[in-house]
Image (tube, rainbow, N blue to C red; front, side, top):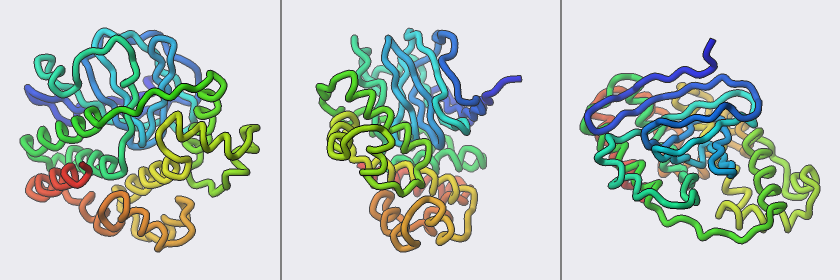
Length: 288
């Protein structure tokens, strides 16, 4: 039995959007894959490893992964609980305009995703699942979302030792495995066997985010998943996600997403094409 379900959510002459739900247990690399169209994978929950040319990239709700047609790659599952992602493919004649020219290196295989873009992704997914999205609004929102992520200036390549990169990766995996954990810097560093200050410096250099900012993005991704499911008790949700109290959660959500959790929940519930067309594009514009 397959451990992954792929559902085509939208298909037009310009764009195909596929939702993938993976139940694969924690494990090593798959067999080599390839022969796919160029696509951008945005995760709604969980994470997986993307192995390309002897380099491993980790995809998670704060990190999109770009696959370029012709590449051969493998997938690993370093976390429990599976993952869910949305893949955006363009017709080949439009790939270069949106995805950019093919590069010799793979430095752009992983791109950071802002909380506002996480919300825009979740809103678009909700509209597609409910079959309430207008085709024109869908194509416009999806292209704006992908363009914003892919054409943001990439972080300069940090000069880090192999050991430092491994440490940053282990810290990332620890946070992704349990975003609600409220352990401080000293505790996290002790778990990883290093100095707290060294860990903070290495992580920021490797990913361009502080440990706190990265954890917040993971927590907000979980919040969006719960809100999309219709969670009513926001105080309980705040506690579940590791925020100190309801107001702390609300303030962080408004600061990063631009909406209150209650408003986001109602908008994610919306299924009509008219409403989706209005706020999907507005969400894209607010994330720039």
